[in-house]
Amino acid sequence: MWFRIADRDRVPSPRHCQQPRRFEIRKNIPSLGNCDTLIFYLSPIHCVSVEKQLQELVQRLNHLPDSDEPPPTTLQILGRHQQEQDWQRLLFHFLSSEERHGLNYALLEHLLSSLSDRDDLDYTFSRLDLQDVQVETEVVTSNDSRPDAVLWLPGEWYICWELKLWASETHKQTKAYIDASSFPAIDLSKDEVPVDNRHYIYLAPENASPPEATEFVQVSWEWIASELQAFLAKSQGGYPARTTAQLDDFISTIQQELTMTEYQENQQEKAQLYFDYYDEIEDVQSAFENQWDAFADNWGLRLARELDGVEIVEIPDLPDNHIAIELDPDSDDRTRWIFRQGSSWAGIAKEQWRRRTDEGSVIYTKRDDDNYAHITLYHRLEKNRQKAIKDGVLELTLWHGTSSDTEFHKMVKERVRNKIAERDYELPPAVSLAGGSGSVFSATYNIPITEHDDFFDAYTAALGDAFVDLSVENPEIITIIDESFDESMTAYY
Image 1 (cartoon, rainbow, N blue to C red):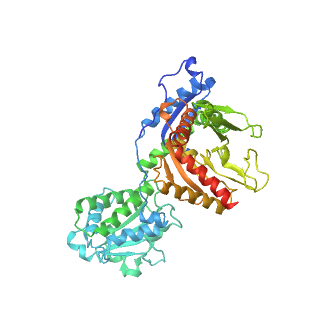
Image 2 (image 1 turned 90 degrees about the vertical axis):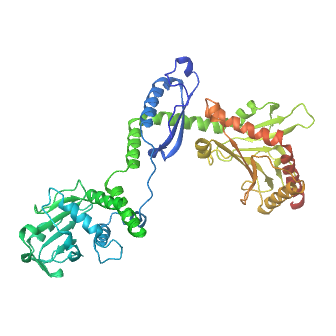
Image 3 (image 1 turned 180 degrees about the vertical axis):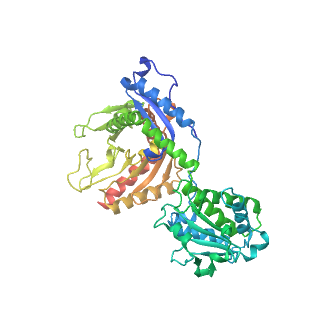
């Protein structure tokens, strides 16, 4: 994935800025709704200064690595990824040899060995004693405090654990654990253990505040994750697949919650870039929105001027925001088409596709009642905006609109399909019969964005390709629509 400015890399001269300039940035920017493509058009007065800023933005974006958001872990799916108790259960589940995970004492041995190698923890253990090491969670002490876990070898040593994620220590918990004389819940008296073999671990994120009791050694979750990962790396498939998958999933939860992934760093950088270049982005975005609104009101006129072999005609009753053309005006087979401009129901229709149902006359103005039927090729500017900008695709749908009687529309649709089948007519490559209740067929065309300096010129070109494809190069499909519409009008009304 890469970024580019879809124009010259150099700052333009005033001559190059006579027309609005087109800029394209490809890649996700979270602050702009994770869109893949932004296309901006700059007015001449701002062209030089804004282009320079956008070039800097593109250069900085190009230095960011590509990265995808990692799949969620099981705890994240369940919404329990920030629950301290769930982390506690998982960690000591894998450390306890009594649990049915298939690890036996292997992970316990690995972690105890790694703890003994730490400079800040004066702890040693013998592998010969592994089978006698016991693990218990939520252990009640003699002073009614409750550390998260205790690992111990009766009469030899113990490790008292306090776990933290987001919360800080409350009520001097760690000091209470130090002051307790025993762990009655597991029948362990501190007097039975040499003072030097009484160990305390405060397991928390790297940036967490230190524990109240200085006897506690602060160990990070990040360190635990690295040790679990090292254990898996050397296991070489020697343990049950489900267990190793669960352990790997737990590691991912720790890493994704406590350390910024490459994807998160990437997103943070992009968000900062959005802030750094907010004025420039806002400027060009506003310019594009203005041009989009203008295009919605004049796309029909632009299309009419681009088409060969057509003539713009005036129809007295036609609203000012619509355009009428005559195709092949010098021919006996000339036909009239109406381009109904606007952003919502932007459509192309033959003159006869909008008629009164009581007398059959053509309607040009807004309807006064429900006695009319119509079909139109809609390209729905606003609805299909993302598809056009992001994917470079123009979609036209032959639809009956919201006013035509449903049964009448079904009749038109059925007749179109039957005539296509009866004549063994092969649809143009761009056309496919629609399955939705409101449409007869749809047609898709590429918007040749790279062939034009102006997105709206490219969109107009795509409209031109569609119009020529359907009305000139494949007139049979229009004939089928005409016949189906006329026959349905006669039969239904």
